[in-house]
Image 1 (cartoon, rainbow, N blue to C red):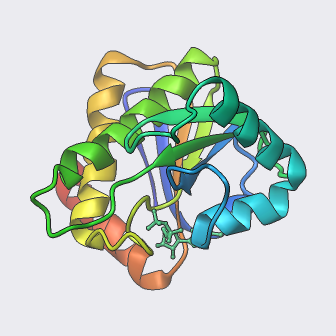
Image 2 (tube, rainbow, N blue to C red; image 1 turned 180 degrees about the horizontal axis):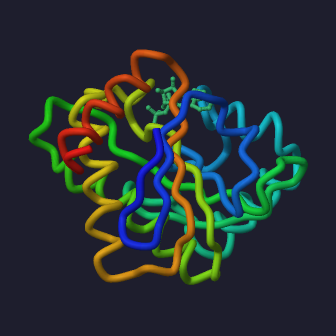
Length: 184
Ligand code: ADP
């Protein structure tokens, strides 16, 4: 699925985030920035040691206690096709009353802000927090799309934002949400 918000093309596709050729791909990292399972494992595997080395440097120099939930940092991409990796940490789902919605929106928004600050034009997101972290996919997809919509009201520097979904059912959920939110 493809549509436009202002000048920015939004694509919702099924695929593997490590194969994207955007300026940046976003990693659903954990607070440690030292890698993990799911998207995080796939990105570190494909990116190689360069990505981990830069994450370690960020831990030493910027975030000694780990990257707080909702924040984002950027590293080189090592062997990946994208130029940069933006690492952000989504919330662990704890039932919905521990600021999960706000923290997930922060993760998307801070990733977008960082991309614009670095003058990047294209960015690919996975479905942050909806895997091991247990965030319900329907509300997760709505937060992802609405946060992008809100961000693009004040900022039209990005040419393309891609949502890369790993399963057919996640893809269908995102497309349903997009149809409702954008009346397409
Ligand atoms: P979190 O810990 O933030 O929940 P996960 O990596 O466990 O992150 O899962 C987030 C989503 O990413 C899940 O829907 C999962 O199926 C999906 N996913 C896993 N590997 C990839 C990949 N290589 N590309 C895109 N999405 C992926």
